[in-house]
Image (tube, rainbow, N blue to C red):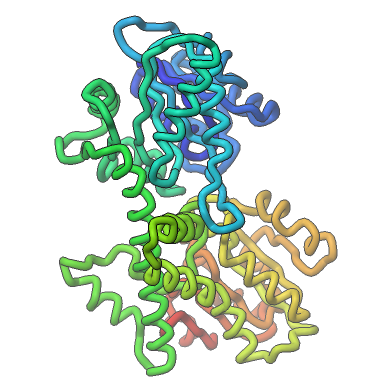
Length: 449
């Protein structure tokens, strides 16, 4: 099939590359000239295991190309009279001032499609968008065609993404499910054929209405965020009651109706999806007269949970942290990615520095992103990015683990003990072997432990 992928960010680039790998002719669009030049060499502009290698394979096979505009992309794709061109919209939907999804990029792309479309097409919303967006895209494209006095057969479908950063290629190639929001048999047939190579079982392809598909994405992310916030709230109860949250987690997760996924307590969730999608779904609820009591609670608990480690530092060292030095391990919002959007490390480091402390931080892959995020405090000398966990912890009053990278379990703890000013570890993800560390002379505090 001929596929135009508008947007070469995380979702667009992974989706386009995987489809090209299966033999489809894919042109990805990005209007950032510097980024475009990088993409054409087969280098992903963000960290995702295996993506750059897969990009280069597809580029070498002539299946994956990159252009700077919709017009240039359409010109690269042959018009096949027998089948519509598939045009995916995969641009950002940032959080607006009121928490709702900002659709300015989606609608700008829709207008550009209408201005350039020269063949039958199915326009597919891959971006995370509120209910009713497909109708808005349909209207924007149709209006531009009307302005051109041109009639071209097209329709709009919804195909939300469910890609985990750090495991996106596996998620796309072997999905739990593929949601197809279609308004016609034509769109359903095309999308079923597109995804057939990725789905072994018929039940993996779930066809629903367009609006239902739009809501499913938000509901799924909000449910996962709810599980996290619920267990974080349980961890706070455990803290005050001398109970081990990990034992509670195992007991709760063994119930087949609940399951073990997303039940680990920690120092709050972040990333590009959960924070903004919970807020966007709350705004969707309010727009139709539903008070989002559960969603508001999920969001409030997460805001408080991001302050957990700083509160533990203050409880031990006092509010005035002048002269204190802390090591922060992990900057990305989760392991397997360099994404720091809404990462708990940001609020923690800002709070420590505001209290007078200096911070040395380490992350295996997110250092370059961190230099942009923390440019001012790095320049001021309040934050130093270390090359290793041990270097970050030299003469530290405490190590604060924020991201559960596997390598942090493999640290030489005996050497670490000798380097630290005081052997204190605050494990913000319950990631470490607390019994082992205590046996080595560390004071260890976890989340609800």
